[in-house]
Amino acid sequence: MKTNTHRRDVGFTLIELLVVITIIAILAGLAIPAGQAVLKMARQNQATNNCKQVIMALKQFAAKNQSQYPDSVLNPLTGGTAQNANEAFHLLFQQRVIDDERIFGSPAGYSPDGMIGKSPAFANAVTANENHWAMTAGLTDTSASNVPLVFENPVAAAWPPQWNASVAGQIRPGRTWTGGQVIIGRQDGSAEVVDLNGSTGMVTVPQKAGGMDIFTQATDGQTQGILLPVVKGGVTGFAKDKEELPGSLPEHEDLLKPATPLEN
Figure 1 (cartoon, one colour):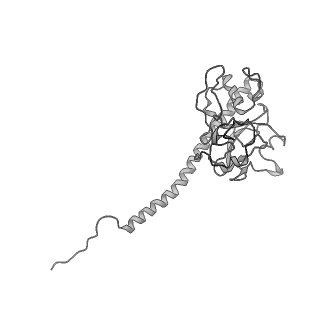
Figure 2 (tube, one colour):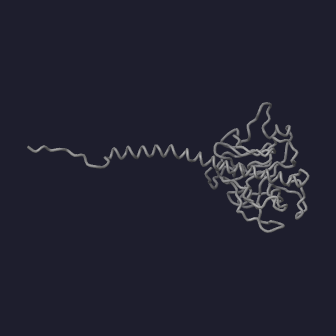
Figure 3 (cartoon, helix red, strand yellow):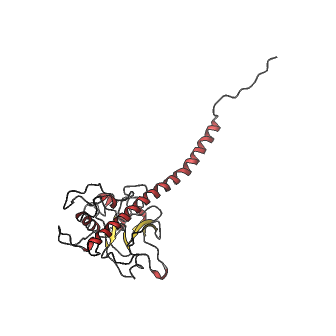
């Protein structure tokens, strides 16, 4: 007597295939945010290191110029002092303190092309849209050690500075990292990622006890000047049809327009 045996076909059934796809989708959903967080941290670490190197270069300059930073020293080629951060940093090349402009960039912001030009002018060093960092004006190497010296470019030269968290992750003036963070370097050579007081709109550093923050507290409430980077052209600038003067305040509507996205 012959007995029929049922043999299961080798391979996935439709239900099993759907289960596998669902599991893969769940794992991918968990992995993507984790990967983005790791990438953001790596970029912030690089930007923080760049900030520290800029401060180190300023310190080396001050050691050769009676404790003064380049914004307070006459440029022999122009006969004047720096009117923006790019001009101040440019003097570092002219005095042969540094020869690599890449430290003035950020993995999630403005970055130089590495071309600095020839001595003595180094005309191609730290030109427009090649500098990510602003600096506090008028400080010296003997100023208080906790004063913010170099920090990511704010929306305007106002003290304390403000940033626009609504354009986080974009190459724009005043942008922040996602989550409302910026990198701030101090006079003592340290630099860190600082959480701001919001993750959308205009934000600044949180106030401490007594209504002060890390900017005003370090300067005894005295307003300080800020040298901004030179930015111009298209969505990477304050205006589309004209070059903005360093320190000018962009229109609020323009800050909230879509711009070139960049993961951070």
